[in-house]
Amino acid sequence: MNPPGTRRAVVTGIGVVAPGGIGAEAFWKSAAEGHTLLDRVTREGCGHLPLKVAGEVRGFDPAALIEGNHLVQTDRFTHFAMAAASLALEDARLGRADVGSPYSVGVVTAAGSGGGEFGQRELQKLWGRGSRHVGPYQSIAWFYAASTGQISIRGGFKGPCGVVAADEPGGLDALAHAARAVARGTGTVVAGAAEAPLAPYSMVCQLGYPELSTEGDPERAYRPFTAGARGFVPAEGGAMLVLEEECAALDRGAEPRATVAGHAATFTGASRREESREGLARAIGAALAEAGCAPGEVDVVFADALGTPEADRAEALAITDALGPHGRRVPVTAPKAGTGRAYCGAPVLDAAAAVLAMEHGLVPPTPNVFDVCHDLDLVTGRARSAELRTALVLSRGLMGSNAALVLRRGAGHPTDRRSASA
Image (tube, rainbow, N blue to C red; front, side, top):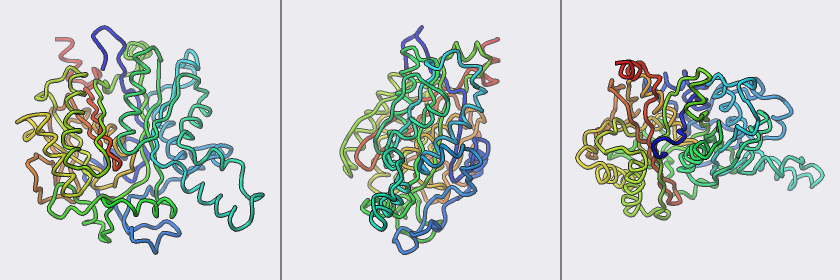
């Protein structure tokens, strides 16, 4: 992402709250084993809606992870983000004593919908009981930037902060924004996205998406890259990563798990799938160029996998357009087929999975997919062992955004240590 000799952003911590598990270890185990976590929607007030299947985060107790004064001020999407940020900082072994100045740590999150559950509850009070019954935190809890604000307040972080209010690729854009902040001089940035789109109000809003799957069978509801593709299944949750300047991370004894090497974004317009082929291919090419990465160096692709025939075809062609013949040989995977698309949180979960895949030398499978009908080497059935040095993460939004992120394996990997000492 940066010219030689400049500051590089490396991933030192991963925090996950997702249908696949809470914590990076549980999440990776589920992804590597190809578990399907999609199930019937159980959230109160949603039983009568045509959206029947989703990826819910189960077993999440926000009170066990977040202080009471923060809980009452925030929506479920911020609970996820705060918990994931804490897990990421713990994973990076970055405590307050390791931070030289609060101004050296920033926070960047992405959000596509904000705090729908909190907003619905307070608006119902307004409509049913009157304005005096609406809590004061309604003014901030629904807001897209709430997660950034609460994470920074809770951690005492006073460095550069921001929010990307966007559709799905905003998660990758937030990671790129954080990496560039590190390149400009910030020591550490906590970055990522988490969403909670399964409250009744939020679900009704999603019913207008033609790409949404209303299939009632969890094993058939989300099957990207197949002849039976009938749309995507939404999910809640997300991930936060700790990005640090590489030399500073090494100085404090942290292991760089991956380098954020390149990123690019384009816009092609809502539901314009034929144009999204060119837009996504351009994003891939520009991200590879920024990373100084040849197409043949890509070892695994984490696909966007929207799950409609037109969108899947456009993505498959974009991959081969950008990577050439290598695009038909490189392993491609979409773990989100087993957990659902958590909107802005989805590509950050893919980025987390990509880092873990490079560490374990294992490409996780695409759950519930067997009859691939596109010219891709889609990993299905079971995980595949592979030497992974470079991962390409792709994302497209329902409103027409496209993004690509290139991650390089960290120097802390045993194979790279051996190479460096040879």
